[in-house]
Length: 380
Image (cartoon, rainbow, N blue to C red):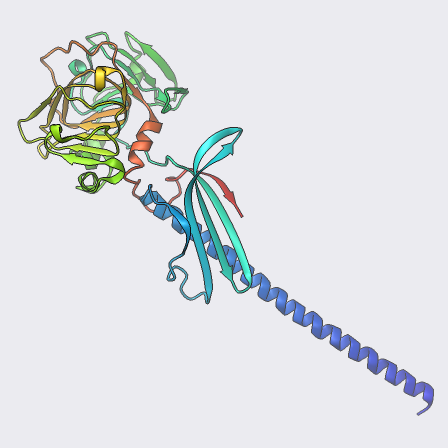
């Protein structure tokens, strides 16, 4: 073989060696890239599924917060190999469309292999719900003519601070019987087509619901009214959740009323001159097993502040206070003989925000979190 041919052969050999080396390196990089992409994908999936898990838990326990990083339960992703994921859940304030907004911040950091992924979610702090039984600012299965008397009843929706929210309210009055506005009550509300009607006498017929059937079964207990298992509200009240309290004698109430205030009166007992103190809020229950608990002349301190939230009682008469939220009366036997003097000027204004803040205390029970927690920020 001549020198020229040998040089060609040696040159070709060197070129092939270099090409082979480059191919090996490219193959290694491809494998590394595939492994990296795989790990990154798993880290992302773990982070997002962890957030979904946390949102579901938060929906069932609205007061849950975790200030220091905590590990996601180890059995949540069994079979995916070695991973780690931590989370925090804290209260914060964010700027939403130029307006400061109280929020809950959920932060998850997931690590798989050498890849990590972070997901941050912001939710509204008030993710309670409006119970289906609340079809009006004032709802009952029995007659409400004498109970409402000459009050101001408005089913249009108001915020916590009393600002009107257009076209998002309910009926002014919803009753399982006929309703006669014989005492000149000023009534407003929102009809089934989301049309608002200001308070007026005589009221517009579209914002008073009469003879409604509730699917054939009006709730027969405070728990049923809110969609909970029997005994839930009493248990939460006994546990003192968010300032809640349970009493059988109203004299034992501790003020201000917060959380779930459960007053279980003995059969035949009437709570007269029922003082709710100053700036009461939350869920107020006045009931007993036979739906015969009676409360009369219910008022706040000096009748100057409103109760904010939802009141669920068996029988109520002489409502000498304002309510921002809703009232639901459970007994079919409301007042039909006595006349109320003292209601005039007092208001029951529907507020979905006040109701949601109240039901938020107990957690809106259900499966999953979608439709239960308002999420307005999801960042990866």
